[in-house]
Amino acid sequence: MTPRALRDISSAPRDGTEGKDRMGRRSGGTETDGQRRSTVSDVARRAGVSTATVSRVLNRNYPVAAATRERVEKAIRELGYVVNAHARALAGMSGRTVGIIVNDVVDPFYAYIARGVEREASRGDRLCLVCCTQGDPQRELAFVELMHERRADAVIVVGGSVADRAYTAELARRARELDADGSKLVLCGRPPLGERVPTVSVEYDNEGGAFALTDHLLTQGHERILYLGGPPGLSTTRDRLAGHRRALELRGIEPDPQLEQPGAFSRAFGSRRMAELLAQKVRFTAVFAANDIVAAGAAQALEEAGLRVPQDISLVGYDDVPVAQEMRPRLTTVHVPLEELGRQAVRTALGDEDADAWRETATGVVRLGTHIVVRDSVAPRRPRRGRK
Image 1 (tube, rainbow, N blue to C red):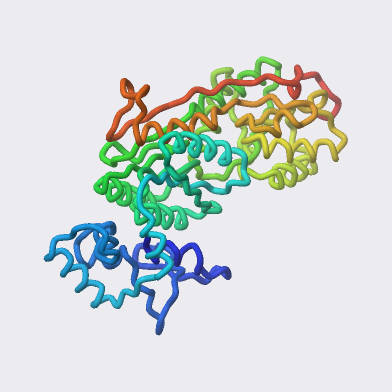
Image 2: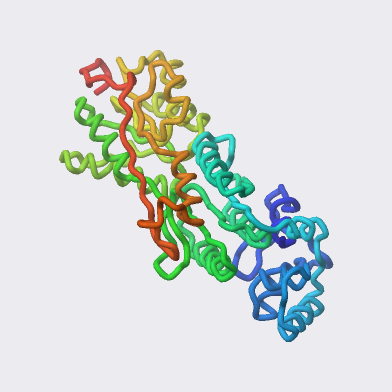
């Protein structure tokens, strides 16, 4: 296991003062006399080998050609690389592992996917290791490298991705390194990295679900529909907004920028932003919350403002996590097969005796369907005093 990963995860400054390397990535590592500590990746680049080869030289647990070993050891000396004992101990734990990298296991979206990964991995007697990024792309890259050094059979990255060329290029590089060493990078719930990058992608019909949900509101007479939540720039937000806009346009309704309010996937955001929009007297008759958690926050703000769901404002969510059924009224939402996404991610990467007929072993995309679950939070639009 690479000290870089442990450095990024455990030793990063918490005051926002971390440095950057030449590619603009946060270094966040221990520094000596103002110099960033060398990493396994640094050694690999200097020696012209993969990070896995460096790991084999360090751990002496796999045959390495004498000339290659000499180049790696020379690079180690030149860079002054120091092995992290904890990292070496973990790296020595080899075999039959699946790594899953999520934003936060507290979020039910990620928790249910992780459960699917764990259950499918356990069928093959594999250990499942879960890493949380807290939404930091650099932590995500560090964890991919960590799982590579851990020699995981597959590394599953879950959730939407940001549109950043440097990040995408770095993730693609690590996907190639994993593939070269017999592992596989799986993108779960996010777009592929391109045909030339050896990954597999397990997606769900994000845009289609959003289109169907907006169309459901339109059939109930709602035209001023507030779209609330979702980090701007995230692929998940982009796809859901695209489906929402497409449904409006097919009905001849011009999307109103004032009614598109991205921000976060949190309950706190849903409550706070909804209260602000009500105070600003923004006109809408229905709310499309970017996920069920945002919907719960929006419902709280509506109740505090004396507005009833669905009599005054219709409300829908996305994902169909347990909170959707716990809300009163129960929430109309889009069902995403979260646990099955996790299972399919493992099957697609490692193979399944029932899946050989359709699975693409090198690169490919598996897409699962979504559908609306109609409950009690939508009613036909009625003219109301002071609100359309």
